[in-house]
Image (cartoon, rainbow, N blue to C red):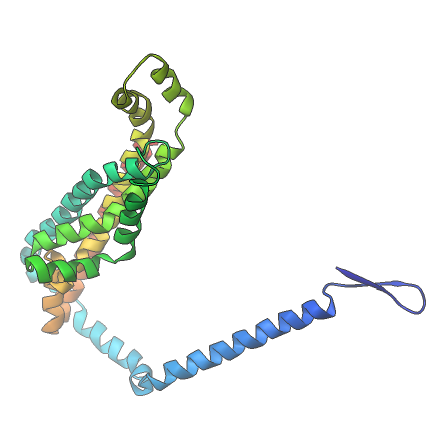
Length: 272
């Protein structure tokens, strides 16, 4: 708050000084100018005829997609099972790789803060920075299309997520328990097994279930790039404009995600 005295000797309070007001209005002007510039660039690369015609197209697709083609459901059980396997095996593989990375990244468990911790943090950042679809595209080019590429893509994408949450949990443990076990003459591995691991096991279980729930969602779309699962059937139905099949697949995906959310919530509730 800025204060000044008027000629009658009364105090006049102002919320901002002239310099602060000028700075705020300048910021607003720059923001509006940036918005107008961005909007012009977007408008130049947008075919507005299709935008205005979108409601009619959406209504036409909705008419073609209802009712769902229930006769197609028998062909979806195997792809749905593949999707669940991609998420489950990918999560298990990620946890196996994330645990040692987390212990190397945590300040209180890493053998070397200068040699081993930076590569562990790099692995965490690198695997979290690239989307699972991009990993799937790269792996399909390397090992070919199929469920295995989807499993590896999910696993690699999940390493950073799991390792980050785990190493943060490791750094937040109660050090008095660790010191008490170390005072008995226990070795480094015994201290880790009896002083650290029991404290982080609830966090480990919660991270595993939470990531599995996320991976169910991500694995449903990996088939769009050829990595197996129900997304492959969705891609095929979209390419053939079989909208009745598309709506059925979307309903199956919605049911699968809802079921995974229910299981995840129950397991996390039991853990917590």
